[in-house]
Image 1: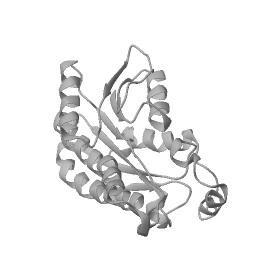
Image 2: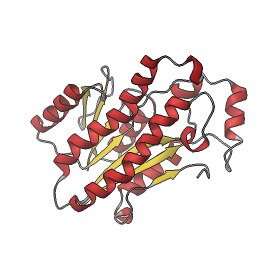
Image 3: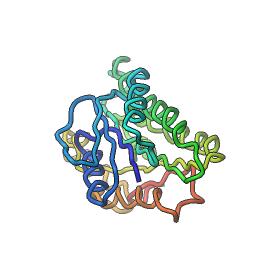
Image 4: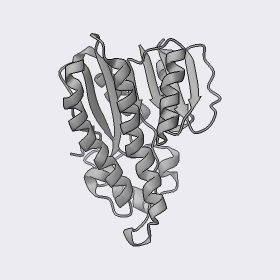
Amino acid sequence: MIILITGTRKGIGRELAEAYLAEGHTVIGCSRSESDLTNPQYHHFICDVGNEDQVLMLRQNISTLGLKVDALVNNAGVASMNHVLTTPVDKVHDIFNTNFIGTFLLTREFAKTMLKPNRSRIINFSTCAAALSLEGEAIYAASKSAVESFTKTSAKELAPYNITVNTIGATPYDTDLIRGVPKEKMVKLLNQQPLSRLASFDDIKNVIDFFFSDRSDFITGQTLYLGGIN
């Protein structure tokens, strides 16, 4: 399988890339800067997913390699904790450009290359901040709520082409996005989950593996939250 994963320079995107490479897949990654991940089956491109011209160039570069994406993981994301009253509009644009516009652009462009008889998969990322309406994360949650809504409708539009679209609703995981969160706030957040612990890499990959598999052929337009959140 040829898997395109956005945001692979670090964090969960990097870990996913390494895991799927270890399983023998071809992985295409992208980020706003170079990556030090080296593997004969790994191809990395510099791309700001919220920039249409760069996404179009990414698609062209992948086509030039003679590769056709089977699965897209829209992992790239940014977050910022701000009270609504103190949130600059530039920060709103930055968050929506990466989290929502990026998901839209990658889906639009690479779904075009997936129009084939074989099944194809698109996996998006949301967050528990949307489901729990977390204070201080109004804009981040709103951008991911937009992703969830987009997942439902794009799943309907792409179903005739044998493309499924689903979203994983991630709970806190040890990445750069949450390391700056005060301990007291993190404990309060985890206590809102029926399963009150941080997510592990295996927890996240398990859901993505399921969405990739033949077992999920009849599942599309869904958001699956971790930790018992709904």
